[in-house]
Amino acid sequence: MYGVTALGELLIDFTPSGQSERGNVLFETNPGGAPANVLVALSKLDVKTSFIGKVGQDHFGIFLKNTLEKMNVDTLNLLFSNEANTTLAFVHLDPSGDRSFSFYRESGADILLREVEISEQQIKNSTIFHFGSLSLTHEPATTATFTALNYAKKHGVLISYDPNLRLQLWDSVDRAKEMIKKGLEYADIVKLSEEELLFLTGTRDVEKGTELIKIRYQCPLILVTLGPSGSFFRSTTSFGRVGGFKVDVVDTTGAGDAFVGGTLYKILEKNKKLYELTKDDYMEVLNFANATGALATTSKGGIPSMPTLEQIEKLVSNQ
Image 1 (cartoon, one colour):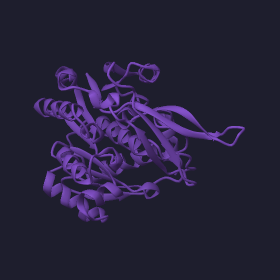
Image 2: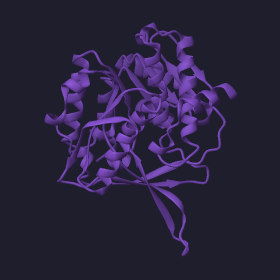
Image 3: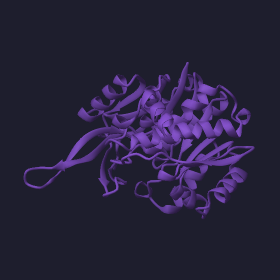
Image 4: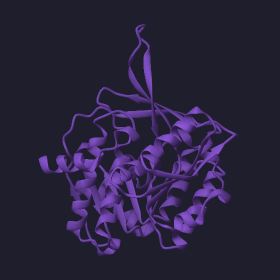
């Protein structure tokens, strides 16, 4: 039995790493991809995890598979494609450590995952199934993702969703909004940034925006990350804010994924239905998730920056 299975992109993040002698920017090869980052965050907290996705039959693909295996993520359903190369992303950091991306994904391997390649048994044997919106941008991965979601619904698996808005990967803004909202129809747990809340609801007001999503999509748990200010939650019975943690920010890549990992870890640990969790339970969940996300900003890269339980507990106790 797996604690969490995730489906989606596994890619290379080229992260800025100083300058050459000639003054040119140097990039470091870091393993990444939002769903994979979430799984590594969980695996470092001793949760049994599994990844479903596709990489190229190339050096990058082999590197990524080896990385997940080193992090104790099951790769039985990580497939290799001979049709396309592994997807690449170049990370750009501003002076505060906030990041933006340039993607090299035209016919990238991650979007070639097919419906017939989805293991129903793998999803059935999981407590939580996690996905993002990037596997909804192109076929055949779109159909493969909804196939996996229908398997999760069929077997009563809790569904976690991070829309992870990357408009440059969509054909149009309207298409992005349509498909991201379709993903909300399946979600039991949804994690949004302030930007994504505005995109989906037309408001930055976390109380109003999450209430709109709760009413329209019947999501039992909606989370909004607020950067250094912490996070907000709305459950079926309560809502609240939890403050953030002060850390020295180097690179925000993967911070939201670390937050999701921390959230799912605490939900698994409590071993209750979402509707059984009290407001105090959720405040505790978010405090832990905030610390997990904060620590992920203190070093470069997605997968390499995921913290240990000892680091998280130390930050929580110190602040």
